Each structure stands twice: as C-alpha cells, then as structure tokens.
Length: 157
Image 1 (cartoon, rainbow, N blue to C red):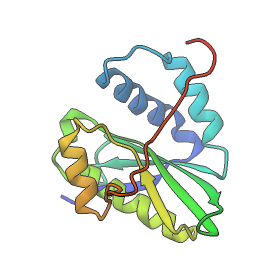
Image 2 (image 1 turned 45 degrees about the horizontal axis):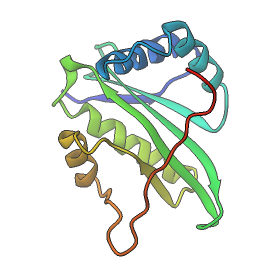
Image 3 (image 1 turned 180 degrees about the horizontal axis):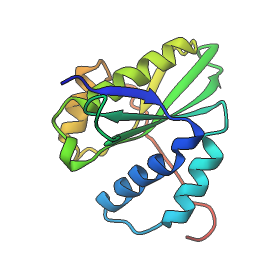
C-alpha cells in the first residue's frame, strides 16, 4: 500500500482537529479543550502562512496522521522559513511510513514556497521521531555553536 498525503482544506478542519486532539491526549494533556483546537484550526486553515497536511494509509482509508507547517520570512537567509510545528500519527498507523510521507511532503511544500530551511523541535526522549527526522536529513546543531530553543508562557493557562 502507498500512503496518501495532501493539504487539508477548510472543510477538513474537524478531521485536523480530531487528530490534533489525539496528539494532545497522547501527550497526556487535557488542555486546550477540543473546542479550542477546532476554533484554532478553523482560524489557521484560512491563513496563507499555515498549512495542515493530512495522511492516510491509502486512497480508501480515513486520515490517520496530521502535520502542521508554518511559514514566515527569515531575514538571515533572505528567504522564507518553514517550521514543522506538529506531527502526529495514530497508533494504528505507526511504523507504516505515513509519518515519513508527511515529512517528505512538508519538505516539498517548503521547497515550493522558496524556503531555504525547515526546522522543528522534537523531544529528546522521542527516539523514533529523532531517527525519522535524521534519516530525512535533519540534524541537531553541533558544538561549538549550539542554539537552545527557549520559550516563555505569557498569561495564565
């Protein structure tokens, strides 16, 4: 079987949201709410700087994976950047190549938009994810110049 991947349209916002809620649950979280996810997806799916990619095991199967990518202009490369923000594959579709297909499609989408880099973050405990990303050419920054991903929450949860 060959996996199928595509850019979700606004009519698929509920499917995207369902998969992202599955990711939230997989991560052991209960917030944001299901409704907040749907509202966020509906908002973002209409913008030109965000795409949700869906994937299924084949043309006859329902979507079992989602990838969110965002685009912005990067000053340091004088070109657009792509940020692979989320990638989630349901348990039933893991180890099928669907995650790889989604990342390859994300790279294609970034290239089509003239991006000169695609970046992501991944938990250092996610060995399967790290292996996947490295097999597709992603590399961690190496010494002596290691960049740290820092963040700060603003407001209350």
